[in-house]
Structure formats: structure tokens, C-alpha cells
Amino acid sequence: MQIGFSINEILFLATVLTGALWVGWKLKLRRAGGAPAAKPLWVSFGADFFVVVALMFTCRVAVADWPKVPSGSMEPTLRVGDYLLVNHLAYGPRLPFTNTAIEFGRPQRGDVVVFRFPLDVSQFYVKRLVGMPGDEVRFQDGAVSVNGATIDVQMLGDGSGSGVPPEDLGHWTLRETTAGHSRNVKVNPFLQGRLPVDGLGAACVAQRAGAWTCRVPPGHYLMLGDNRDNSTDSRTWGFLPHEQVYGKAVRVLFNLHDLSRSWTAL
Image 1 (cartoon, helix red, strand yellow):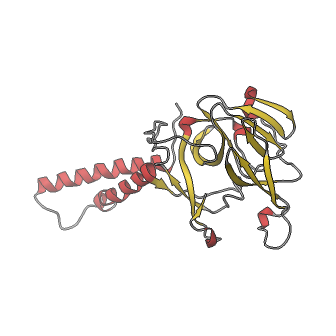
Image 2: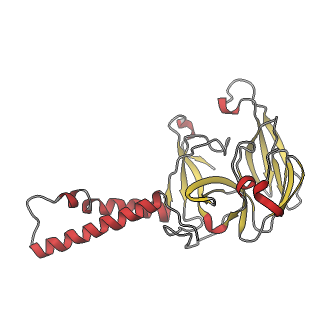
Image 3: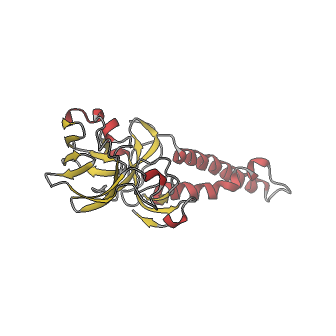
């Protein structure tokens, strides 16, 4: 078992510490028969924050949280600086320091999933779930199909002209439809998915650069970034174990650099 140490674990420890101080303060008041004229510093900077810290921890672990997108690996769906609404009730909360979950549901094909990075479980990543356990995923020139379906893509833009975001200049925007799910993906026309798939190992067969087929093993998922030529995803580090799933990203809450993205559904 890998032990994760992130903001959730920090909040858990803060909850335990402030909770212990709060209990100690209540016991002290009971023995003294009343409150002193001035509160000790350990009460002012510890016990009094217990309720606030506990509520923050409960919300982040059991209901939802709001991480910030640090990179462009999920463009055009997510942009750098987006704050995401992550729903933990979609799959069920996971306990701090462990991968133990109280499961309410399972990730589905096409979900934008937040998960602990398998190579460093203290980090959280966000990618698109492309392949479910047992799926045969075919990748060709930046687009995917599942279980023998024809690759279905539509060109939406070639990265030129006015109004194109600077980060999209020179890149194709494609509308990809797979197993009934559609999404916009970004492809570099000079690469078109010709990245190595070293992380997927023997489960994949490469026909040529930028074209391969994988069978997703039981208990795992195949994760890809929507920015198909600029994403550290399953192609690099392998299939995602189910126990590392953290939550489902459902909306962009806001982006301070582009307020028009506020409350955008994913």
C-alpha cells in the first residue's frame, strides 16, 4: 500500500490536533468552574479553530473540493488556472493516508477523473478515462476508439485565425466520439500522437508510431489527456489502478484569468 500525504492529510492532522486542544480546553474549563479572564495562546490559535478545520476537512474528503489546474494537459477541456469542482460522492470518499474507499459508484468511460498519481500518491492528477477494465482501446493519430468501433473525429479548427487562444495556435481541435461519448481534443499536426507508449507494456501492441491497440487489465483504467501531444498520462506511467481514484471533476468553478469559464460543465 502506498501512503499519500497531501492537503487532505494535512487537514486531517490539523483536525486531530485542534480537536485534542478543544477537548483539553473544555476539560480545563470544567475543572476550573468557569472561563479565565484571558484565553491562553494555545486556545486562541488551536482549540478555537477546531470547528472550522473539521468542516474544511469533512467537505474536502466526503463531499467536494476545488483543486486548481496547473498545466495544459487537458486542453481544450480544462485551461491552466481553472478551479475544478470535484464531486467525491460520485465514486465515494477515500480515507486519509490510505486508498480505502466507501464506494458509492464507479468511474465511467468518458469521465474527467481526479486521482492520485500512481508514481507519487502525494500528487493529484486529472485526466480523461478512455478505457474501462477489459476494453480494447485503439489509438490512431491522436484519436481513440473502443471495442472495435470506427474512429469518429470531426475537425473543428486548425489553430489559425482570429479569436484562437494563444496556447491553441497551430494545433488542431477535433471532436472525438467514442462509445457514445463526445469531447473536444487537441492534436499537434506535426506529432499526431506519435509519442512512446512505454508505460503500457505488454498490454499494448504498436502498429507504428502514433498507432497502437491496448487491452485494459482488470481493476485498471486507461487515462489520456485531451491535449493528446502534451500530456503525461497512461502512455508514460501505465494503467491507473482503481484504488487510486479520488473523485469526478464535474465543473469549472472559475478561472481568475477568464471569468467566462465560470460554472462550465465538463
